[in-house]
Image (cartoon, rainbow, N blue to C red):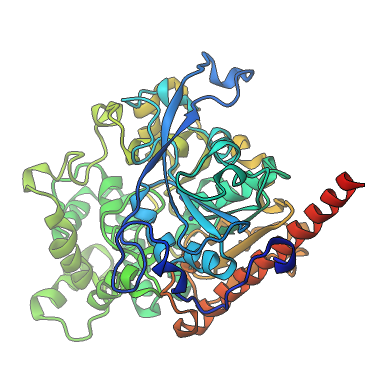
Amino acid sequence: MKLLATVAATGIALASAAPTLELLTSRQVGPVGDNGRPTNYTVYSFDQLIDHFPNSSRYEPHTNATFSQKYVFDNTYYKPGGPIFLYIGGETSLESRYSNLQTGIIQILMNATNGLGIILENRYYGQSYPYNTSTTEELRFLTTEQTIADNAYFAQHVKLEGVSDAANLTATQRPWILYGGSLAGAQTAFSLVDYEGLLWGGIASSAPVHVVHAYPEWYLPIQKFGPSDCTTRINNIIDKMDSLVKQNNTEAIQQLKDIFGLGTLSDIRDFAMTIAFPLGGPMNYPTYTWQELNWYPAYDHRDFFEFCNNVTDQNPPENISAVDTMLANYTNGQAWTGLGGYADYVKNVVVPMCPSEDLIDTTKCFSTQNQTFYEETTNSVARSYLYTTCTEQGAYQAAPYDENTPSLLSRVVQVDYTQQWCTWAFGDAVPPNGPNLTWYEQYGSFNISAPRLAFIDGAQDVWNELCYHGSNATAAHNNLRYGENQLLITGAGHHWDSNGILNISAEPDFIRAAHEWEIRRVNSWLQEWDESHDSTKLKDEL
């Protein structure tokens, strides 16, 4: 976005749910920290196909070339015969996912099953670019179906250096269990759909399996669960701002921009997005927001509440409180309650991120209106993510256009704002009216289903409306919500289950329960593997 066995047949001795460190003394993966877990990993390269679909016209002209896809693995808990856990890297670098092997969900599952964990870096991210640049033509292989084909091909062909039974670790020999959070969660689910029988199971955490063109619902959890005095004040400020825009009151709008220290921003949509940065949004924001709240201290960022405390300050300095009435003459004498605190936060936290006041109206800071900027073909996370957004994924940043629906984002921000970036960046290679959502929806959307595929979501996640537990899921899907392979964590945010602290019993109750549920799901799948493969072996012997 974008995303947490029967021992008789295998000889595996299952560990208890609470992680232990006994295996680390005899087998380590690089240096270890005070907690006994690896602090770093050796990065390996895998020769991955650039084009898995030589017969598809979608990827013409085709190529037989390969690229170096990076991965790391952790075998500190592994015993021969154990399962393989593949963490899907998603839209970031390999290194940024290490914590999931060190103390997070993969460590938890490895320890519970004597398994081996792998992180596979996504194509076109980190150090796994197929080409030295990302021209539009070179990006044509960055699609959902090519990405999940990477997972299957890797599982069939990888050879793990130094592991005792490396020849027997492919997905045809051992149960491979995938895990992904956010966009990687959706890729996990889609992998299980397309490669059923090869990939044995998967946990899709906060996985946006459904896509839309515009996604104003990103702000719903903030509206619903955020401090009501804060959200109400912002709603009212946005309503007043949009009223000025509707009236085309350029004088008042300029004063408003000046109050926020953003007077030189010429495009009103850039201004609207910039003042929304403390809240966040589906595409861009440079500060920590609601999405970055977390139960896990190392990843928790409280900036959102610091922002709200500014907006709702009951006793602000006089120079701050005076701002609330500066535009009252444009709104029938009504004060803009909280405007002073809101603007003060933006001026002191957001605006200083721009290196020079002269640059506020450039793409180096807060303006987006520069076609040359988007045409830059240097490999980057931003360009890769924008490409998939523009071609398949959608979920453009947008406000509800209905004036009667409370909004935390000005209604001047609609889909045409993002679509312009797509056109500038990729020209005719992207649909002019928005992404072709059918490429993404073909895996089942809300009705997605595959054997041994589990969904776990957070009720307060900004992406939840696109996930398995989204309120827009069809009636047919709603009837399936009570199965064993789904869990909605009340009070949780974006794939909160992916983090861990090496001691499940010391975790918050709702996180501990989620991790114990995931262990139970995986163990049931491993038991199913053992039973089915014992049966196959018996038939072969007969």
